[in-house]
Length: 130
Image (cartoon, rainbow, N blue to C red):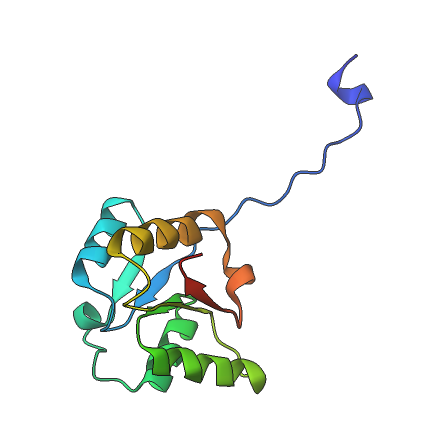
């Protein structure tokens, strides 16, 4: 039995790491811990985009092919409106401040960044905890 005589195995394409963009509502310690775990995350407060309106920030994240992360319910509602109107965006993850701990948020965002790909997130809104 040689490699040439075996049928070719179909290999799934490797997952591309998902890059994230945190709005002003995502706590600094969450961003810091994600970076310690090698997650590619930009923060609006550091990028000096924290004064942008939610719509502009989601457009920016989309232009950078980054999934938006927020704890702002109005941001989630806006993204769901974009879904209904078929307006393209790179994805949004919402974690309600009352229902997701820092630890759970870090765990779930690391999982999203390393175990999913950007195609999965197109026009998707998900709520933490997963």
